[in-house]
Image (cartoon, rainbow, N blue to C red; front, side, top):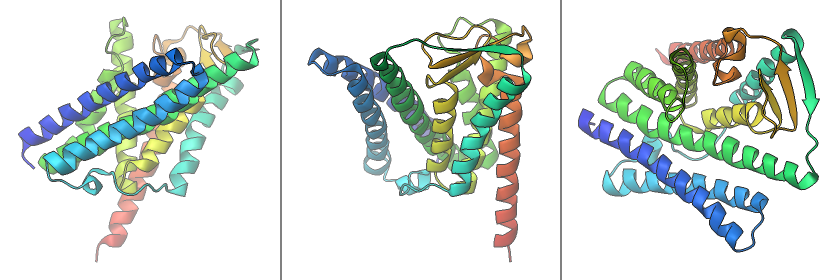
Length: 282
């Protein structure tokens, strides 16, 4: 694959992500205008977001570029048990560290049952499952494999990872320090997901890991921060002003605790890859 084509495909993949997300969000509003509940709307928006992204990527790859989806990590859906387990342990370990070792105060919401269902459905379906799989299809599917074909694996791991980190500061009024920390943390996350992709051979396992992280850390179940948001089932208010602990303006996802988790999982993935390569050599 030529480098120009790889860059163009990467750009198209990001456009597809933005387009699919916009259509899905507009779809929620449209369904609600016809009497659909917000909870049901969140569920259908999530399905639409995933399916539309996949179908548009498939259309571009197979019909316009004569490429195989399987060569871009979009093979038949299959999860590796080890990544399901590690994907669950990562956010649980980070959350447990805060609850056990960082001074703070735990409180619970007083939302009604319907409000809770809306929060959970929006956070779990759209912000967790849909966002996790869609972002992996785009960043570790199309972009990673396009750059790998045009350059090499190292470029494919580093460039999309930095881009992934940079995307998380777009539109945000962060300070320079917070922006740098977010990009560094986002890059570390991107490297972790890329290594999982290399080890598993597809985007589905890291999509699941991504979804689990979102579900536990940001979906609406437990908010851990210096100033917890109210739209959560429970909130843990950290009694610390340390930038390393709080993660700054972005939150604990860019904290040194979360960063340590990303690095540990990345090392595990790297060791798995090296072990697999050593056994495949004659």
